[in-house]
Image 1: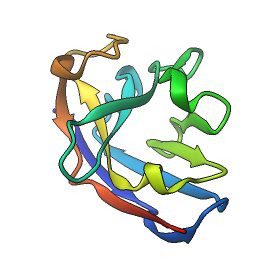
Image 2: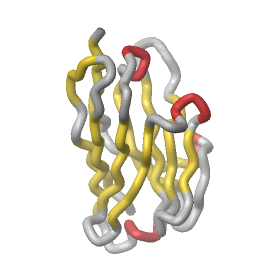
Image 3: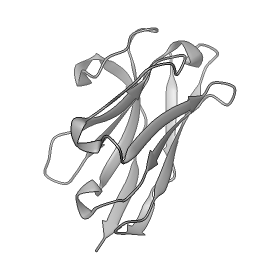
Image 4: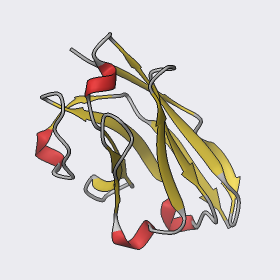
Length: 125
């Protein structure tokens, strides 16, 4: 069982940066890949980025490469999402999630079984 809690969202201006955190619980957290997803009003939830359990590999949505960076600190049981050069279209609720099984690295939404409650990011122009 993995429990996840996001933090770090807020209201920012176009071009600003923001770092989201995802705190995981459980001794096995370091064996789980973690993904970030976002959902804007009226839109489906979409993949943002993911990172392996060790942090050795990452994957990004093509449209976000170069602006967003995912990282993790297993000593702190925390995964981060650094977001730079924010745009109004980045406005969404951001969720972190973990797959249903440990040591599975995937971008498929349906493979993620554990979800945080989400944190709101609003980019104002």
